[in-house]
Image 1 (cartoon, rainbow, N blue to C red):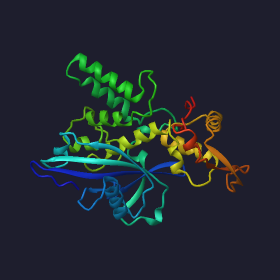
Image 2 (spheres, one colour; image 1 turned 30 degrees about the vertical axis):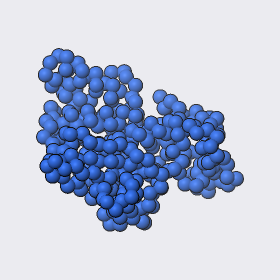
Image 3 (tube, rainbow, N blue to C red; image 1 turned 180 degrees about the vertical axis):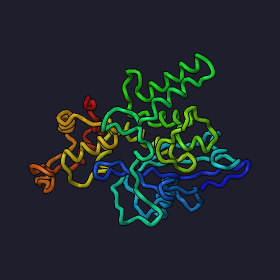
Image 4 (cartoon, rainbow, N blue to C red; image 1 turned 30 degrees about the horizontal axis):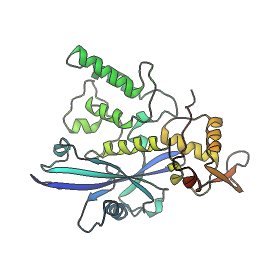
Length: 312
């Protein structure tokens, strides 16, 4: 928790720790799913990343694997929402791992990230949650002038793929911030932002402070990154089937992929190699097991698992 006083500057380290388990994207949380692992930067931390690792392991008992800096949140308007008067800075990291539930302590848990962002999962179809389109229209119509109403309508259409526009899976943060501005998430009600529909929908599970905004930033970064870097393999076991790999990419992107296009792309990029073994329990014919071909990192520094166009 950030403790800030008038004129002070305090820094919090926050981890967005992601795994994919049985085709479900999961995020590691504390405080009954309301917070990401976090803690203040202290003098004994030799670096920002070392401090983040320390807080995650202390709070969850889960080691970190792949880690990269995500974003630094330092907007002036955060301070009131965080309950202080000084300058509150949050430095976030994105970490990719494999779920190890037996290592967690009693206060940490893995949660489906679509519990926080149900409008982001389009694997069962492109329809948005039932109250959302009507609530967005009400928000757009509540604009103070015709120009503002048109601008709001356009923002909603671009963000949520309405009025014939294409859904862009990377606009996770923009969608969450629009819903916050429209008063459609619980954090907005907490911060006194009015909703223009009755009853007001409170979409997705709330998080403390602005941790859901930080989680949205992490999801957007990861969705963008899997299109040009092979980071998805940080989430895979040492050996896997091609169907396992496809399901993991679909889970992260929130969209279904064309099976043959996906496999053709993986083969063209030479991302995997056969292990010579077969998977035992696939529900059908035995499937070949593959492993990530680590040499690709040296051979093609910017190769990635770019998902092909989603199935119509």
